[in-house]
Image (cartoon, rainbow, N blue to C red; front, top):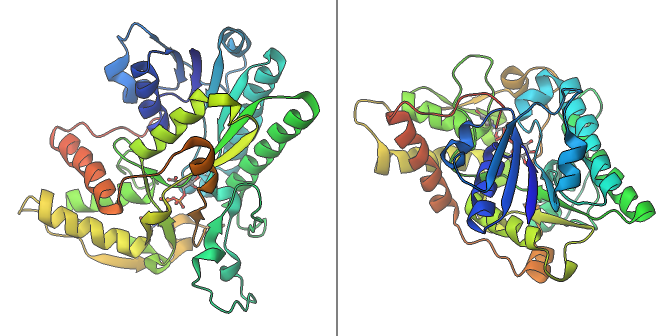
Length: 363
Ligand code: UGA
């Protein structure tokens, strides 16, 4: 197939581009920078276009028209940005992505749209008046694509502008499907992690995802900060598992993914952020430590102090992957410690060669 991949040189995009090329597809890759796909730039089946999709004059329509499939990964997906530049987060994640979807509608092309598990928001157990018999029961935190309700915070907590923008985009795709037979598949990633996930913070204003903060603290012997004690929980999914599932969606055997939404995540890898910090510190001490660097202290910091005004958080989210099992025969294989070790190994190796990814493109 000829596949147009937008956001092809971000974290997920760079791994997916590699897989698409390995499978023999022709890829037209669009991104702000080519750093994360540098090793494939000479590949005869890859055309890389350095392009900001917000620029009014670019040839989106002709690229879509010439493609067999469009994959859209373009997003600002770091919580620090939802707090700092909420309008731009809305503009990129909704307004600009909608133009891509509408071009696919016009040209009758199938679209795979990356969305987010953040659409689910918070759990019912986190509500002050929930009165659940067993608030710890994972059932209250397990989200299903087609049946779960969404719980988001108030407008003043502008973290949720990202979730809302993505949710609205999903709803518009669904409506185009209903009214005009548009063929899309939506993917909701649950905390993918692996080599190239993010840049390591270099300046005070850099706010990557939590893994990068912790990795940076380990490499430099600074402090690992737990936002509000690190009680929130996440299910970490190794990028190879995620790409395997995504590739099955690309293949779309028997049209199984037509107008479907898929959670992609590992329900077996649930940890609190505090457990993540402790596990990373332990793996680092056992496998990677250079004796001269002290192991970091783990301290708690208030959320508003770390992120600024408007901070809120998703407390817990476990993917229900019954649909991916049933329609795609997919099952995640990587355990949490294996996932962390492989990701850490990449950053330790690259930092020793002074080659840690830069902040351009934010992921
Ligand atoms: C983010 C995005 O919002 C999602 O769309 C995306 O799917 C997800 O990343 C992902 O990586 O897949 P989130 O999990 O909240 O969601 O991202 P992080 O910034 O990695 O935060 C995870 C938790 O760690 C949060 O509770 C945060 O407050 C906490 N944190 C972050 C710390 O305790 N210390 C830090 O130094 C940074």
